[in-house]
Image (cartoon, rainbow, N blue to C red; front, top):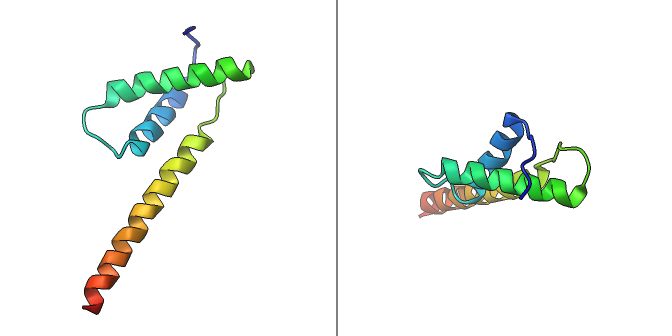
Length: 83
């Protein structure tokens, strides 16, 4: 894949959401960083526009997963209280 010059912040943000979507596993920072570069490069190549690729779809997935976990935790706590 062609090497594009993405900002460090763009790569950090994409890597964060890749890590978050994977369930926050330990010791995957290098893999997440490389995956972020690959995803940004693929998105850029597909769009053939500016190198500013939004990670909003990654954010949406991560937020949905986080809120689902929070809802499950709250439901468990409520269930334990009613017993």
